[in-house]
Image (cartoon, rainbow, N blue to C red):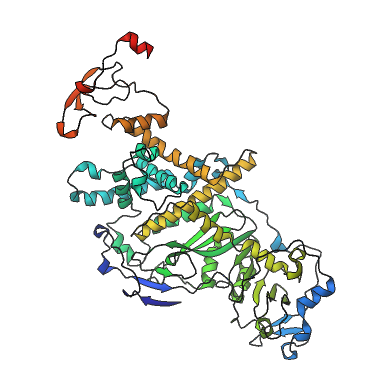
Length: 597
């Protein structure tokens, strides 16, 4: 990977961060790192082993062998006594597969049962599942850090009520609104549309908080103490969100047991502001953003491990190697000696890595390879004279190498420590794809599906602060994990599962309801807002204050129907909504007519 400083002629104008955060643009290192990570195989083609033909006849054994080895076209200089020789001449690959044993290999035996574990097994509502990812004690710490920031900027506001501190109920309501926007796929819509009062807005948004308060809380949301950040950032580029991110990863690992196959890949959180570790990935839809490595279950898409790529850190506890071998070893530490299979693409896969995981971590690997590996025999990468749909196999006691030609001039290289035979999948028909390829196609998209699910109902909003962008990404992942736990528990209890959009709706309502309940006690709110609150809460009238129409109290207020410039004060309140009304807007009704009505 190459690293270069931002060029103003090529990169569009960067938004400035808040000065109070201590990150003025002139003081921030802003690098754009070009990432050469390509999730697809370098040797794949348009027909890259993804289409299946299940209606074709099963090939005969003679045809299988011919398409598997095609030894007539292999130059003799690459074969020595039944072996393929690698490029460096140091590695031998057997042409014939090893004899099959009656016993099942130990690395294919999984003793753990996939699904929710510990207290996650008892979660039966969307909110209970979500709280596993974001418990109250964690959110209370965010409230403390947010209030520290609010206190620091209070002198910039003329009115105290415009910068009031927040609390846990209001913070949950803020997150609930974000999930509600995501459920409507409106994360990038103008918030004026949600708070519109002409009948086109959302009652949930209007009843929960004002639009100004929503934007104020998003601006002030912090995940660390701003007073000590500069000192911590000397040794950690992720100081602004390190503790929150580490705690989140710790929680997601302890609530779910992964299945027998996991996927390691990277995802990109879109971001174009100033960031010292921003990436440029031309193969991603967003292209610019923050790269996060993810380990996810290949079947249920539960995310169990995450690591943010922060580039080269200063000397300290966070100065770790970013080499693929070291990165993968850190990612699989939580599933060590579990006999699971790890699927990865050619950016991660190498022969030293698969040997290390097999011998010292008790894990098998299935992944694509790049042509430049010295352990690969030259005949496996050569396309000269190669018959389309042919496959070469190379065997070692604990490893299998494969070279498949999907069409003329293209080859795909795979290596596996889980497969030990030359079986061709009969369901692929005349494509003659080996089982290694069909298994790779089945499990390679675990992280990609998670990324797609995050984008479908994303809570992310355009921001110039990279910690907030990461937080939005964690909210998306946390909701997906909670959804996986919820559906798993419902299936175990033989109850009906729900679609994800309904799950997000229930989650959003569960987060905002306490705030609406608390806000409903404010009698000075406009009448139409209070009516929406009581409609959502299922209440028809208020009984705390006066119970008779036209009743007067010692409390005075401005008439809610007169223009504000008249400033007409009154003690009379509406019987139903408790709004203050002057005599011009008061109607007297006798008891008989009231009963008839």
